[in-house]
Image (tube, rainbow over all chains, first blue to last red):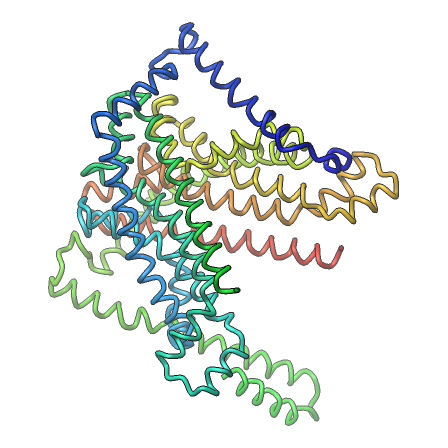
Length: 260
Length: 286
């Protein structure tokens, strides 16, 4: 272990090594589906998946579904993040609210997220509203947790400055606690974005009304169109990756700006 | 408030000083008990406000029974399902699935994570594919797995195993790769064999992060179980949720949610306690 770690191979070696397995896998996939070793219904050839992808893009189905999913995702996230920051501020700043609610919140948090879907669909139906409520719920949990943590870790020195300036309550929150908690809140928002995307897929699986990537995958499964299911999964992964990366980038920039 | 408690404690200590240690520790226990009772009193505010509203609201029919059943109905359903053994049966099936899936996924994750952490070559080869697979959540894999594996028990085990596999492999490889250089050098000075190095240097340093991975793995496995049971199952707690939803039996849905929450809470607390012990052992030992 030790000797191997000392001699760090160059980036190109890592890249070359990293390509081996995926390429082998793709070759095996092609051979498997063309030779008839594997039922092509289970493993459609790559060009078929690419063909389906092209067709779905060309007839506007995929962009339409993707746009619907992203809109839902962002609406739910915005709602959940807004509520989450408010609740987080309340629990973090008021010791009374903390004593009354925190334990209950921690208990509710333990219910696996998707277990909320049947209840939410009973209360809100299968429409857009139900999906957005579920996504908001998913996004709010990490935002609340991290906002509370950020507010609580505000240093006593800062608090003393606030006292010296005789800040009013809202002034204290706006110009002291919120800026001090920003890095932690941003972490919460970042996690909230990841949760919201997962919840979007979940909501679309179980409340399968209206267009969306999740609905696309479910309909592919129902019609036994493996290529469509695979396409959907790739899109889910790519969007998740893009959301995560852009959130990291924004977080990094905002925190750097604060430190400058 | 805590200042006041300390102040009281100090004055009682002064008062009891003459009577010796036994009384003093008894007083401390009493004070701790009072603090506990106060915390509980604060906690009871939420049910004290919501329960009457819920009871009155459902008695007067503000909301339809399918929207919010009476608390007594929920309790009744809970009791009935407990007495008939139905709840235990569904919970047992779910627990068994999680344990099996977790064992498979965590085992594979430990093996791959260890290989990635110990060897740069393995890490380079596997990392991109692993990241790609990890990027897609277990939930999104379910429809694909359903086409390949059907909706039997294999499907559940595979989906749960995938959910547990990713965090275990990630934390194991990071934990092993991040064992402090200084410790490895000490081992080299002692001319440890690779096996000795693994046993005396790498593993002790990597146990806490590996355990963190196992803890995340179990949490993810539990979430995956609920997802897969919601989508494709005819028994288990997730199925109970779907079934209650279809029949518009909100009391059944609520009971299933409560049980899912309690199991999640208990397993998280248990693992957190074990993890705290492990961390303490590390700070003491190293």
